[in-house]
Amino acid sequence: MEIRLFEPQDSDRLAQIFHDPVREVNIRDYSLDQVNAWAPEDLHFRDWTKVCANRFTYVAFEAEEIIGFGEIEANGHIDCFYCHKDYQRQGVGTRIYQTLETKALELGLSRLYTEASITARAFFKSRGFGVVKEQVVGVRGQKFTNFVMEKFLNTPDHIVVACFYHFTALSNFKELRAILKSLGDRYQLKGTILLAPEGINSTIAGSREGIDALLYYLRSLPLLEKLEHKESSAQVMPFNKLRVRLKTELVKFGISGIDPSHTVGKYVEAKDWNNLIDDPDVLVIDTRNIYEVEHGTFTGAINPNLDFFSEFPSYVETHLSDPKQKIAMFCTGGIRCEKASAYMLAQGFAEVYHLKGGILKYLEEVPADDSLWQGECFMFDDRITLDPNSLP
Image (cartoon, rainbow, N blue to C red; front, side):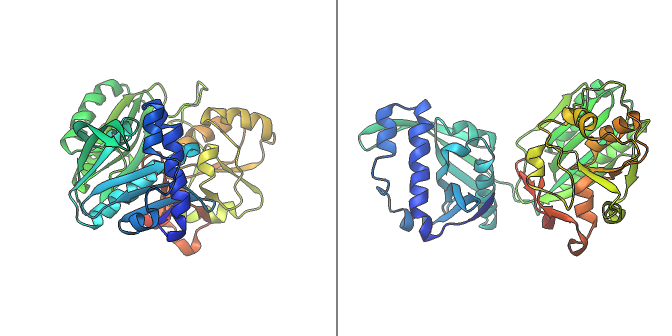
């Protein structure tokens, strides 16, 4: 998916994308008469070319097909904001909104506001908007309920996004929850921290001061003193709130007795990864899920077509029968490869390698001209994918 500014030839497509979701999605919250008035049969009741050209209108497209658009005015007003009816809840709206907020920051705006429908209210609320008032408006003879919503923007130099995990016997993981929540709230950190008997896993975002404070505290704990992390940056906060959750496993695998803190494959530093995967005798496996692989992967890597990481053991059993085969694995931050490599060693594979720090560390350390990575890296936050050029 890509985002670009509106072009005049987009007008007909945008008119249709406005019309269809109103008629087929907003009908959940409004009557037939209301949606017919909202999106009349005449798609060009509005001069789309003129209006879209006179504000910042961004369109999302995939495979040369426009699948959504959003408009922001110079005063911070978000007007039309629609996604194709077949692309609902697939991250399209998130990408468009992120672009609008980035533009608002470029314009030096401190406030965004919109009139959200009943249908769209939850989307804007999850992006940090609050309801100013509920109102009833008239459109072509019909009355509609909608909500004036606003969001005030912070304008830090940039937001630090830190990813880290560490496998260790964390017997006090339940007690840590309240401490980390309090620390995160104090520094206005947002993201997710997972705590389990086997360790910690997190992607967290905030100021330089806040990220450093959290990492300093964690590394002060005896079992986490060797905690490593990777960093990237974002212009807009990629999370909506801070979640500190207790889990039975850091990453669901479903096989008992696998302990990466005791037995794990051979770590390969980012600088040595190219030489390893260039070896024709090495089988390179992408351990991520299929929708992640579609956004980008390493040249020549095998896609196991996993819907869930817990399917990896079945893939090994079905497709990897030679324990002498050299295996090199990678994932986003490295945590899934810890469990995958430990599992493969338990199955008798002798030479199992995995990329230390995962794709994020590789993209951070390996120059673009030398990189064997193709595409973008899928992220589990509002950025959706990470452009390698955004890394420090």
